[in-house]
Image 1 (cartoon, rainbow, N blue to C red):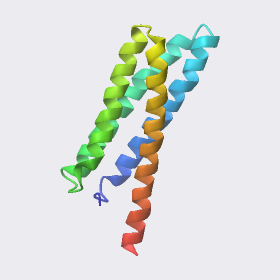
Image 2 (cartoon, one colour):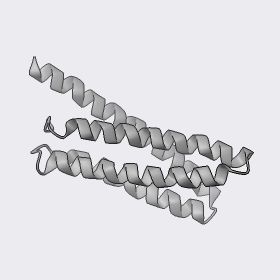
Image 3 (cartoon, rainbow, N blue to C red):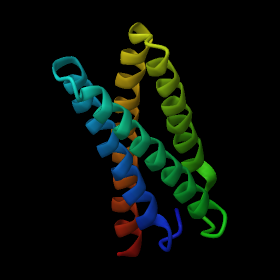
Image 4 (tube, one colour):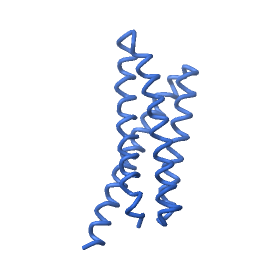
Length: 128
């Protein structure tokens, strides 16, 4: 069980990352349909990178000073690496790889979000 002190930060970071990935999908649609879409998609990629860094930092805080298990670090690091790969593929204009990696990231973020909130129910059950 993760430390209650840093668990809310982890939940907030995972939620922010999931929203940022959703915004990436929306701005990808704008990229195809409007002239300013490329700028919005690039700006939201920066926000996604920051959200990924926050997610990783929160996972480390839950583990090290919080005394929780290190299991939250691997998914956070995986999503951060996927974000960096995704950014490189986008800058290289490799849409055939960029789009599937983005879809995998969206699925991974939803899975991670469910895992974090499932931990919340386990925490509530343990408290009772």
